[in-house]
Amino acid sequence: MIITLNGSEGSGKTTVAKKIASELDYVRYTTGEIFRAMAKKRGLTLVEYVQLGETDPEIDKEVDDYVVKLSKEQDNFILDSRMAWHFIPQSTKIYLNVDEREGAKRVFAELQKDNSRNEMKNTPKTVEEVLKKIQARQKTDDTRYLQYYNVNIRDKKNYDFVLDTTELFPEEVFEKVMAFINSKINAQPS
Image (tube, rainbow, N blue to C red; front, side, top):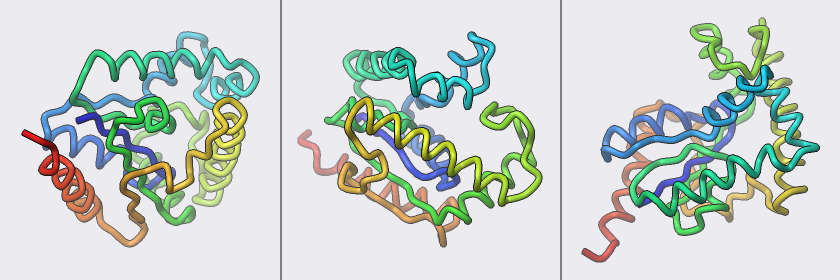
């Protein structure tokens, strides 16, 4: 089973993807890591690289081609990605949602621990700063994906399972997502 996971910033995608990969003994891929590696090669931050993608479709195409190739070469993995659900239509498509202010609080808390991700050159000093940066990135992403692919990545109809994580602890999110995945696994012919 190929599982594609998308969601709002701070919804718990990374945490859940890691736990699912561990539970199922699947390889976990993230397009964020791919984008970061490509940005680093060019000496850019992730934000700068994403902005370049607004005018250069080849930026996204490289990642898209990799995702499609991956789905043809492997059967069992999880991919944390904004667009993988679109490029791997046969995948089990999951979306995690969170209230944007709660998501910003979670991202802010993580950035206080570790700012090795290069989305934000300077660690934001407030939750409000994080929220503004998240909103700017969402606008950039939404515009680009609509322009290049004519899709709304936040449209819940694109997914097989949608979960609001705002009021849930990470373990509760994992349990609910795994229950859905297990129902799909159990429904597959042996």
